[in-house]
Image (cartoon, rainbow, N blue to C red; front, side, top):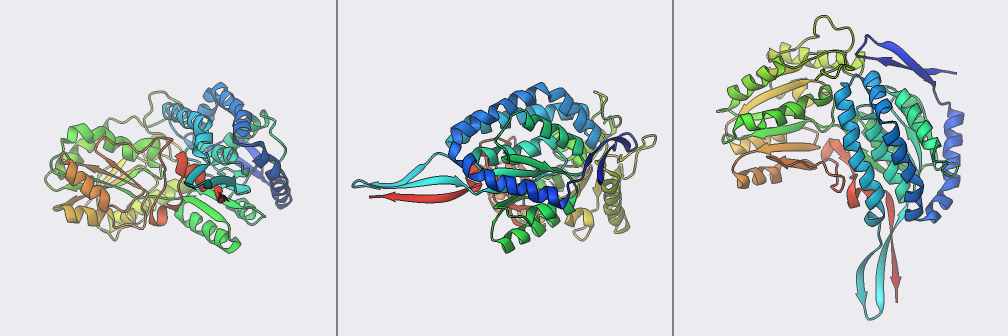
Length: 457
């Protein structure tokens, strides 16, 4: 039996444990059981499904400390961030359980002379849910819980970078004693994911890279099933000339460097008016000079390691390309001394050209390109100069200008000044290469369903 080995990227890749890689026979068996369970799970109704899932929230609370430590060890996330992420997940989990039935309520769009049209939201069937490693519990919860509430059965695959978190999730789900086939998990890398989506499924729900998402969407198209894809991003943040830079420094720092920069919805290109350019660069440089980098299990650590050696090497290649093409490394740009593992210093790059990889590609690590602009039109052009369209930020004291810019940016979510799009009731998803469909709230829940109209006369 092939093994999937888990290592700690913050401690020189020491081995943490392993799980068995799922075989093709096992994958087919899990999907077959999921297919057999669809009718019964649907007929329970949303209220009873939620009642069966509520004890999982209690399990989540009971295991919070264990989950946080395991996340820290498997992906290198600082322990304080891991705990904070789980507190944030708490709000989403409660919203799904408390409002899922409301999101899926029947709608009456037409009623006249005793006739009515009722819109009902029925499950699609079997959902293959595939998620990445950067928020190990949150990604599971976002992908699996709404699908189960909506009435879909789920065959789940977590990332090969955090199999032990996946195993813990399996144990927590087993404690619910759900009907056989309603939830199961397979383990492995992309090959296992591809085997899964080529079975008799009715939905592919995916979060991850754009390259993989496009391949899965192609498979969904050929199978003529639905694909919901939340993929990569290269979010711009525009800073106009009337901004007090001290007031936004914290947003700029956390927007790029949280989770060691490994966030799809992170700020990955900072576009600053030329009059504030040097000020912003110097203040961010000073902030990075004070950051504590090191042992992810230390409560004082602000920046831990990247998830894996391959991620470190990709980041180094992207930065090297920029430097060769003329970019200036203001700070960082290398591995830190004295730390063994997938560490990379928080980095600022200037003199960035639109032909460089750090501009054109998604940069999944603590590297921030900063470019100047002169006019509002130029800022919008720079912001939209990407194949991605997940999120964006706009900072200006002139609200009309900020909202005008937001309306012209091709992205699924745009934050203006102190605005923050992260609410469980608010749909999340992207334009262009950042995805198809939405998740969260009414719109996200209804994406998981067939829409049926029952016309009564």
